[in-house]
Image (cartoon, rainbow, N blue to C red; front, side, top):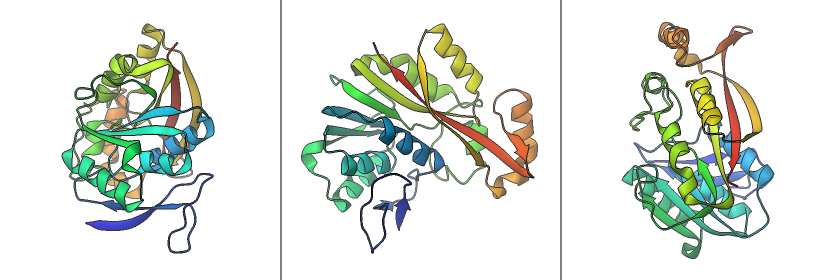
Length: 251
């Protein structure tokens, strides 16, 4: 078990150990930890969060960081549902809710493979933080150590499953927020948007340096890029990837 303070760059602060902009988290082995993508999602959500009462689904909740942070900031969240395919993650998210003194009246938990075990519920906002990078990249990175990542070679398998089914779980005028990560086949996802006539709004575009420990796998990365499974570029001697946060509104 590792106890750490996870910093989120956003316009809200919780004081812990005389520090600002922190929430306290416990993350257990085999549970996905917050990454830069988590930060990008939170920053985008906070900027666009509605003022009305809302029910929110944190899909792929991991240790619960997204849902907990939003519950602390927005009092108009009537219910935050945490969902993950991993029972370890669900238990971890529950523990972190208790650690951050989240009212049990405002939270629900679902062990669910995407939407499979979520029934008879409709949400105003679904935040998708399910794995969205190539499985080939996940297995050579430190991000998914001991964490399942069944995304397929091009990283789109789970994202496309969400996109095919999210509308059944959103209220009218509800929104889905999700990341498009260049370490997956973003073009394939964009073609799905076009085919299904889904209108998207870009909330943010974020370039970020691929960690140095990935450079030893450069040949694998180049092979995947050559077959259009992923994309990245080189700038100032660094390998750069990109994450776009997009919003889809259900009419």
